[in-house]
Length: 370
Image (cartoon, rainbow, N blue to C red; front, side, top):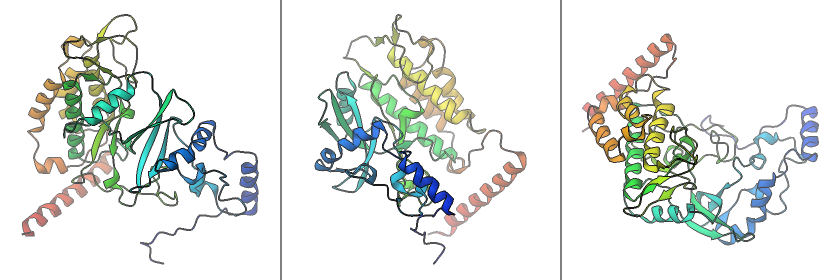
């Protein structure tokens, strides 16, 4: 068999003792559906009737596929459990698209804000699209929101200056868009800024085991981000606020994942200024603190993360500063690799040499390509 053709055969357990061990574990319930999974299992038929297919693990009468075999359960797709109880992955029958289905309480503003933002047709809109809203078949207090399936914004990790610039472009653009429509997210953090990475994985990936093929048999490697139209989205509007024109943006509540100094349950604070701080903090934590050659972000991060809210810029002012800062980049700079902080000197020399060689190849191709 060619080395380029990946085997679909599952790895087997090496000896009888291992087979017996996993058979015993299975019998004792180690791979049983969790309580959260049982909730989704119960809704399998309802979702199927509405055009969404859950993974085999959640089908009625599911029986582990490794029973009575010597297959290693850890390489059996139906052994993979859910990561978050509120969200499950599914395939949309109409187009075979991978989607995420979120269970949420209807009371509150999440539904109205998510639908409002999703309804706005604007290229600056980086709020997660809402494909469908389904009533929960068993609990009238709950609804099911269908959205595209997204990956963490830094999985795979950024690899070039251009990757970072594109991410900053989109997150600032999306923040300006939200604020222009009088919506404050109030929970901007790495877990709430995600990406549609489908163009990076043409053959797909497993929604729970992100580093593996859909059948969890083989590791997957992402294509480079550059030129592939990766799009970043703000998600989770569970604590967001929408203000009418002229309405004060002062709010109460120690909410959100990011530390923001003024958060308080008793002293009102400006929800828009919280978003500014949180995005600056995000850029610092996932980019500037991890890579040597991203100090160009400091002209954003420093003012955005001022302790005093009144000293922070507005989203429009952040965009203005970023437009100025990014004007200094040329094409060659955007293609340059990110240098991880703490990279050993010898490794850095080697990686830089490779990067220079690839840049030379790129320029040569530009010269000889008509």
